[in-house]
Amino acid sequence: MKHIKNLVTKGLSGRIQELVFRHNHGRTYVISSPSPSTVPASEEQLQIRYTFKDAVRYAKAILIDPIVKAAYKAKANPWQSAFNLAIADFFKPPTIGTIDASAYTAQAGSFISAQVTDDFQVASVEVRIEKANGQLIEAGAATLMEDGLHYRYTTTATVTNITGNKITFIAIDLPGHLVTQQITL
Image (cartoon, rainbow, N blue to C red; front, side, top):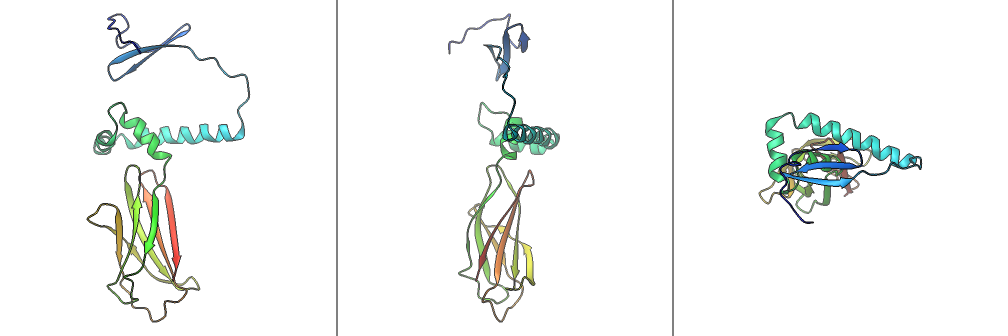
């Protein structure tokens, strides 16, 4: 796209008849006005619109905090605003990789870990250990390891029988998406 410095349209934004002026990173772009669709929206399209409205509300609310806004801006690409990244973050839940229980000895002080990532930031990771019948043995927060990818939980309870016990990692990101991953011993 050819770029011409034009003092008349510099910083102009909005619509004038069939022309739409957009301002992005110090440049003004002119495009033709889109035609409205005559086809009614499907249920899936309506759901996406509602979700997008929730994403916009989230971005507006979270970016009031200057520290959070600065963190989003620092992670954004040069062409991306903190607002755009916050919206994108709303649509992507965290991911939990394979749970590593190889160092779990059923004794207090043993370790369980898993890789937990998010496109922006993992807010918290909790680990639950339950008996086969669902009775809670222990639960607590996992801590981020030095590699910046894995979270480790140090057990506090000694268990006599681990057969059939379940270990669950629960990850929550900044928008509040909750993701779980579970293994059975």
